[in-house]
Image 1: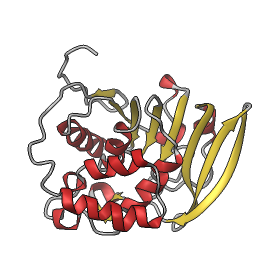
Image 2 (image 1 turned 180 degrees about the vertical axis):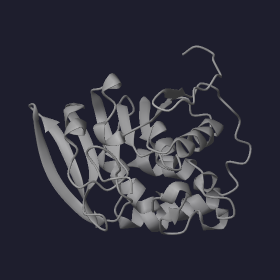
Image 3 (image 1 turned 120 degrees about the horizontal axis):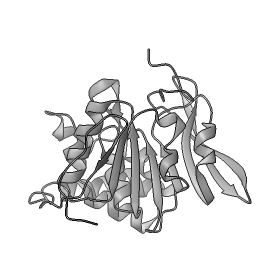
Length: 240
C-alpha cells in the first residue's frame, strides 16, 4: 500500500485510511475491557479466541460520545449522533463471531455508526468496506479508526441496503441496522461460502439472521432476538 496520508471524504466516494498513528493511552482502560470480555461476552458463550482478543484490544471508550467515557463498558447500547447507537458489546461480539473470520477475508459492513464495529472487524479481516448513510458519522468514525492505526478500512457514504457492488463478492457481510427482510443485493454480493449476518424484523424488534451461500444457494438460520435502529434505504425503511 502506498505511503499516502490523504483522506477522501466525499459522499458516495471512498475514504481510504492509510496513515499509521501511535496510541499512547490504549492501555488506560485495559482492565475494564478485560472485565467486559469476561463478564459480558465470554460468560454468554462467545468462544472464538480471535474475537475475544479483538475486544480486549479495541478501546470502546474512544467511540463513545463526549462525556460518556465512563459508560463505555456498560452492558448495553448507547445513543450517538444522528439518532444512531453504539451497540451492546455482547451483540457486537455475537454478530462478529457468526462471520467466522480467519484473517484473509474481504468484509462488507453496512452501518458504520461510531466505527467501533469497523475497528473490531479490521482486527479480524484482511480488508473492511464500510457503508454509512450519514456523512458526518462516517467521517468521525473514520477518524477514530485511523487514530488506532488501522489502515485496512475503506468507507463510503450512501445507501447500504444495496451493498457496494464495486468490490463484491465479499467473504462476509454484516448489517448493523434492522431490515424488514434480507436485502436481495447483499445476498447477491456474497462469495461462495460467504456469510451474511443481518437483523430482520419490524421497526421495534428483529431476529438475527445468518445467511450462508453454498452451491449458489442461500441457506438461512435464525438466531436471537435483538433491537437495532432501522436500516434506511431502497431495501430498508424510509428515512423519516
